[in-house]
Length: 236
Image (cartoon, rainbow, N blue to C red; front, top):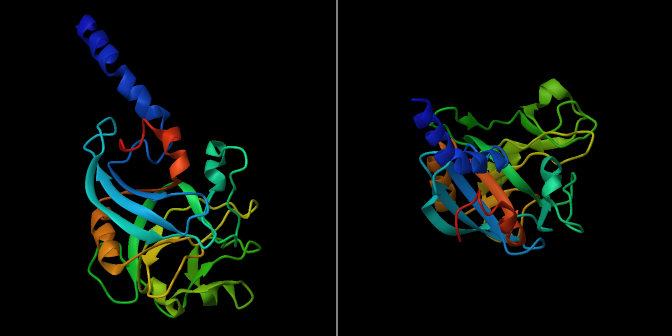
């Protein structure tokens, strides 16, 4: 029995080590929304959906490619993933209008209309996403009557792009001014970029919402960084 156990470990050790070497939450993901920008200054990106049955299995294409808008100034590495940046590659800070490169769990769907989707968040007049680095509520969705009038934030019901969207579990770091209010949301006519979010046309956004209901991870990367995660991402 011991020989069999040792043989099992030896056979699976490479793939187990491989999964452990990939950054979380990507390492343990079963579903992936991969957003790839051609360059760090690109304002558009390609979006593909992938899935796999186990963390050690190969990714299989589940949808796409589709086109998306990203930051008006392109892409910068999220502060939480700055160790993956090469020299000269920017690190995201609040207000830089760059989409944050890195890996994030996709959260619940949200929107202006009512929905029966599990965990759905309906946006109403009092909901605010706080982008004020002086506030302890930074990078959170709360209510205006809780934070007062002096704290700066987006009144979400007044942003047409948020008529439909998905939350992104973006790491908060107020001290580093690491960025806030990162979503996947609607791409509206005439728009040429975002403040840092990923914007999709409604059919593609709806497909991502359906896909992410069982849990998914968002990866935002410039194409030049794909090779840094070669063993973790779908094969090109």
